[in-house]
Structures are given as C-alpha cells and as structure tokens.
Length: 247
Image (cartoon, rainbow, N blue to C red; front, side, top):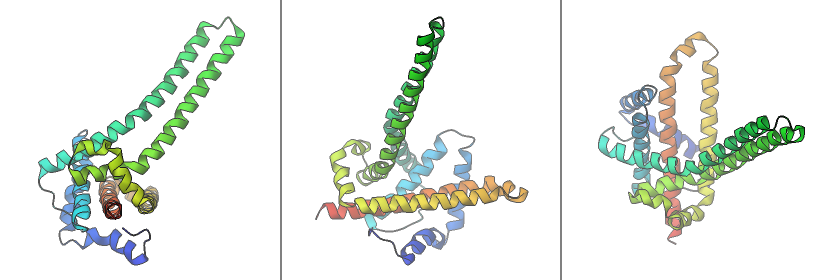
C-alpha cells in the first residue's frame, strides 16, 4: 500500500466489492448474519470478523482485493474468534482502568456518607472520587486511541501467521508497523472518513418515516461493507509494511 491514494485508487477500493458477479448474494448472506447479531450473541459477529480475516489474508498473501465466498464456516469461526479474542484481551486494561475510576468514585461517596458529621471530610471525599473517575476516563481514552492504532496490525499479523499468539509478539509486528507507519495511519484516516460518511448517511435515514423503516435492513449491509473495507485497507498496509521490513 503506497502512502498516498489517488482518486482512482480510492474509487477502485470503495467499489471493488460491487464488481464481483455474486456481490448481491454475498452481501445478502453477510447482511443476514450481521442482522442475526441483534438476536444471537457473539457468534454472528465472530463470523463477520472471520470474513474480514479472509479478505485480509487474500490481500496479504496474493495482493488481491476479493469478495470471498461464504464457505468454510469452521475456518471463518476460528479466524473470527482469534480476532475477537485479541480485541477482548487488549481491551481489558481499559476496562480495568475505567472500573477502578468508578470504584474509587463510589468508594469516596460511601466514605463521604460515613463522614457526614465532619464537614471537611464530607467535602473532600467526593472531590477526590470525581477526580479519580475523570482521570480513569482520560487514561482509558488514551489507551483506547493507542490500541485503535495498533489493533489492525495485530489482527493482520495473526492472519498472516495463523497464530493467535503472534498478536503478542510485539517485536515482530512492530517492525512491520514501523516500516509502513505512514501507510497504516493513512489507512486509519481513510477508514475513519468512510465511517463518518456512512454515519452521516444513517443520520439522513432518520429524516423520513420511510427511510427509518428500511434502516434495520440497510444498517447490517453497511456494517458488513465497513468490515470489508477495514480488511482491505489494513491488509494492504500490512503487506507493504512486511515488504519494507524485509528490505
């Protein structure tokens, strides 16, 4: 992936899924699986992540932008659970920080109640608790930003190696990330811009009753499209980073 996109590059990237002769069928299947996630917990999203991994693998190994078949359900589930598991593990520090902040806040509130007969203590404890909660949110947001930057390369490294533990061999994927950091950041910006544009589309759907009615049908397809673009973008960035890291 070059560190610049031309209009032609972006046009090809954003439209390639619709050039597949069976794209309607594949989007319907993926959309139904995504829709099922509102009813069935976890499993449908794991399959969607597995599909994204399949797209990523084709880009990393062959350099091809493909819209793969919905087959090999066991493979989709295995790949998806790996990506989902990585996301869960790296999100744990954020959850711990936030829960610690909340815990200190509620603890200080309880201590303030116990010290209600002491005016100074009753005033200090809530202030300390509030500060702890805000600090927790701040640290969690910073960690979330850092994780969002490296998560795609961790996913791609797992897809490329086929090993869940590869996500935590930081030296390996960091060399690839560093070799093409501009490409990864560009992929992140393009994906963020696409997500914002699609979010604006959802906002428009609220303007009329008719559009609101079709929103439950449109949203799963749009979410699937986002996952396809995420796999393609970061697969390209990883492939280029791996090439540069070997130079």
